[in-house]
Length: 112
Image (cartoon, rainbow, N blue to C red; front, side, top):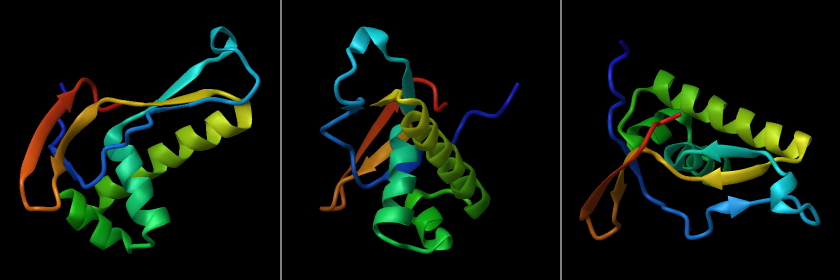
């Protein structure tokens, strides 16, 4: 049995959690679920432009773990874009770090 995932730190929890191709009814769409920590990895690396080591430090994970999270997130996004699937952002095992220094812990189901 695998070890339970370490609680990952995230600095951003999205308000918008669903994206779908325009003009396609929801009943005709398959969904891909992107976890909150996968979104955070994309945000830190691709939007903020940080080095992987810095991203890993911010999320409180090792660099290889950060790399696995990032690759999984990019694969899911690419699949959704290429195959016209909806993206739902939810779940994971993370701790929301509030800018004022406070923390909120969340465990929203499976991390995959």
